[in-house]
Image (cartoon, rainbow, N blue to C red; front, side):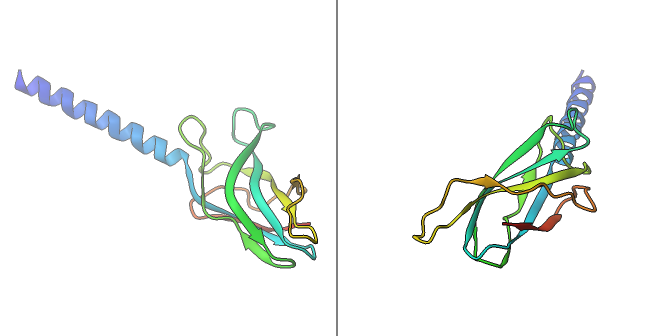
Length: 140
């Protein structure tokens, strides 16, 4: 009887370990999006969007909220590392394209204008891997 309980416990432990490992593998960890502010005033990037060509609907646009990133005029900047994907929506080893930045321009009084989206950017290497940086892409 104890052998049967032990075998069940071991099988359950292996199943949980496999499920946890596949969930973690689905996430593309610590991904950065780099951009260059090509304007004469600061910009504030608040969101990044992209399409996942390996998803069940490659036409669907995915929008990621990122911590606000102010970027001075004519400078290159980067978002903080983002973990893309999760349970049921893998991103690791997927091809991401049409990367856009939602950003606001600062006016001459120091106020942020309404946000706009940049043009879509197609990376030459679309594969999402841990620690990856996409860009830099011009934002104006």
